Amino acid sequence: MDLTDQFPIVQLVDGEGKQREENSHVTVENAKRFYEQMAFSRLFDQKAVNLQRQGRIGTYAPFEGQEASQIGSALALEDGDWMFPTYRDHAATAAFGHSLENIFLYWKGCIEGCVPPPGKHIFPPSVPIASQILHATGTAWAEKKKGSDRVSLVYFGDGATSEGDFHEGLNFASVFQIPVVFLNQNNGYAISVPLERQMNSKTIAQKSLAYDMPGVRVDGNDVFAVYNETMKAVERARRGDGPTLIEAVTWRYGAHTTTDEPSKYRDQSESERRRERDDPISRIERFLKSNDAWDPEWESKVKADSEKRLNEAVSEMEKTHKSDEALMFDHVFGTEVWPVQEQKQRFFHEGSEKA
Image (tube, rainbow, N blue to C red; front, side, top):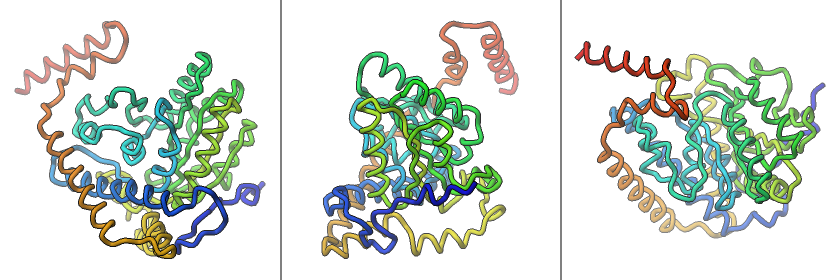
């Protein structure tokens, strides 16, 4: 059964910057707040790609094109809530208060990159697909059992919906009415696999029906719509009404990672067409211009301030020493176990022989 009609894409502001329906969150003030975060995020992404090409950080996962999905959702959280990112959600974690230096350090391979600032509940980026869904559900369950009103927001891609962890997390959250928001960024591809080879259902949002939870499909390039729908889901979770599944339909312009060649499996000219007609940052600029609120001097200041912040973060990142390689063995279990210790000894023995 095609359930596309049951899950229409929610849109508040279209690609031309025109407001489609009345909503209290569609304001010039919010537009400027969103623009500042999204413009900064894009510069961050471009900076990180350049750093990788220069050999100053390791393999990196770009997100250009997905800024609205990440910023709109991240800004719907409150301090004290929990965020569970994938390896592509640096815009979200930065907007939620993560240290820029530590985000860069993560991609440099330093354990410090997994540590958020004090008081910020941000889990390390999840590289295994969908495992963070269980972490988010368990953490939200713990908060519920403590009697708090804290909420978990967990990000995942379309490929994660093929993993058992996705279904286990949604089922558990539904059974126990856990305060967690499942935020899917559907950019059409799980690495090289297109959505139609990932699943037979026409939408990801319709998977909410199996678990009797609210599901919504939103224009992932419309930051206003993403913010509005995530706010509703967060408020629902906070008052004890359980989980929500949100599908943000978006597009990643570039490669899956800096080791990927996307032209091997998709038409890259589609990225340029989408950039021209449906870019999430250009959409806000058009909205502000249509409301006589666009200021080129303000735009220049936003970019200059962003560059300054990024350069300072990179400078601090490059002062940090290389992580101790032994750490990857020391934090596997709470207590030492012989197989891991054996691996550690073999690792250093083989390393000394090569030296």
